[in-house]
Image (cartoon, rainbow, N blue to C red; front, side, top):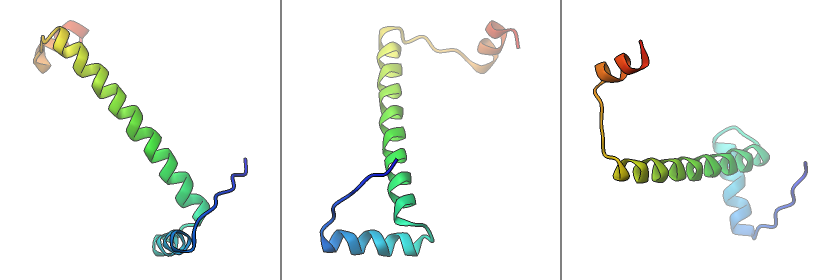
Length: 72
């Protein structure tokens, strides 16, 4: 897939310098940044869901209790 991105001169220079500093292409910089952003948002949603479930049922278990329950 090809994506076109319009940048002003200042942003263009920032992207180029950052990519050079890290030894990657601008394409790799953009790809890594987008993937990281998606992962961060996914992690936040998973955290929010887990916290809501915990608040609804605040039971906790020790490692030993969890291992016994799982037959480990």
